Amino acid sequence: MQFFNLNENTFLITWNQNLDSNLTNLLTSYRNMIMSICGDDIQDCVQSIKSLLVIINNNGSSIKEIIEKIKMIDPKKINIKNKKIKVWKIPVCYDLEFAPDIKAVSDLNNISIQDLIEIHLSKTYDVLSMGFLPGFMYLGKTDNRIHCERKVKPSLKIKKGSIGLALNQTCIYPTESPGGWNIIGITPIELFNLQSNSPCFSKPGDKIQFVEISKSEYVSSLKNPDKPDFIEL
Amino acid sequence: MIKVISKGLYTTIQDKGRFGYRNIGVPSSGYMDSESAETANLIINNPKDNPLIEATLIGPTLEFKKSAVICITGGEFSPTLNDIKISSYSAIEVNKGDILKINNSSIGSRCYISIQGTIISDTILGSKSFYHQITNSNIIEDGDIFLFKKNIRTPEQKYTHKKFELNKTINVFRGPEFKCLSNESIKTLFNEEFSIGINNRMAYNLLEKIQDGVNSIISSGVIPGTVQLTPSGNIIILHRDSQTTGGYPRILQLNEKSLNDLAQLRTGDNIRFKLLN
Image 1 (tube, rainbow over the protein chains, first blue to last red):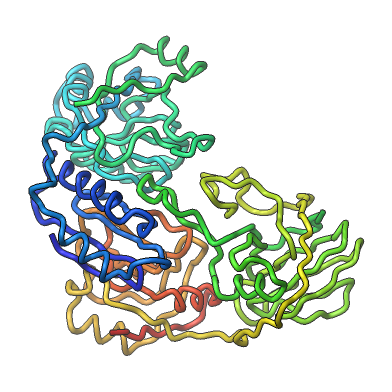
Image 2: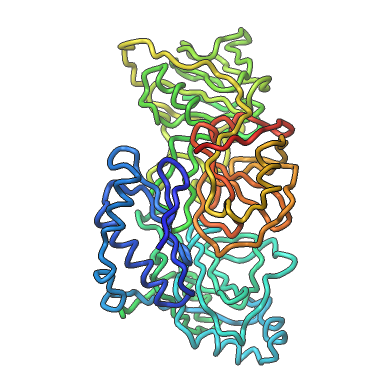
């Protein structure tokens, strides 16, 4: 655990372990702990793959005092196994109409489209971080058998709800946007709802399980978007 | 109410910004030059972080359908009221039917127009700051109408402020990946001038490259004022609307004052970096 001050009110905490689910769970536990012990002193705490970026409010404790508090956290109290983790079930339609790049990625990896779908469905993914767009989720890691580079020429218009693949990650586009990920499916779930004070159902540290739906199920749930179901591990 | 006769180049409503949502990818936004914006509010006894109008390079023309007290701060945009020159950095009384024209900027890039009372506009995730994925409007358009609620307060004391001036020395701290730079690059960074290329509320690109393009990092948090170095050696300074995470090495970090100073510079201006301890 290393600390680095960015400016007068922002610091980074970085971990050097290799990326796996334990590291993601560790970061999530630390984030929860920091939010609960520092409370109103924290303006934002941004979880990424191997780091937390902490922005403090300028009306309470100093950056030094807050770092001291965080250093006092007993690592034994960061129990990554007993914590309840939400696993969100996200329906995905892999119909070719909504999966413009699925054939290219399957061909690249010498597997059938059906294999690619099964491999994509076979893992539960960690929400590693969010960014790029409000509510955009970086999910990992994917199976090596569906590895692919980002597209050399980004698409100008990726549909809202599209599921992407790039390197060892998969993602969900919360809104229509340009983008460089290979698109292999689409979800009817509303990912970013500004009417709510917590506009995104998920946050870094949660998990995502994709569930296949047909084209007709996709079309009908678009009209009546449900909130995604979750289970707690 | 206020009617927008002509919108200018890039005119938005901004307050201090949107806080507490960066973890789900929502940028903070907010006024680009916080010092000028807050001064505009304080001069007319508004709370300092009240929402106000931010104009960029070419200002808007506004028709007041009711009387108001306003204040203009920031860059020199030669403002006029019914074609008569008015001064910046002072409270101006506007009558019903008056036309306020904010012209082209001769010094600085951004000016602020505060209105005594409150501009009525949607608050989304705790802020009225425009941002295209969050608020309905991206920029103010011709014909838009703004309502405002007057809230006249007698000035208790005259607010004194610093005079507006451009500052092309950009103060920076070392960024988390500063150590990736070669001695040669560090010398270039602090001894040479850099000129500003394409820029907007999201980021300022610099035209000169530095020698070692360093490898990308594992995506990590960034904030307004983070200076990124791309693998091809380009330097990007993130500003208020920047995204929340990024994969380019973070070589430097601006302080708040220099973030404000940068917001007043424009394409072609030359800057120098100065390292703070």
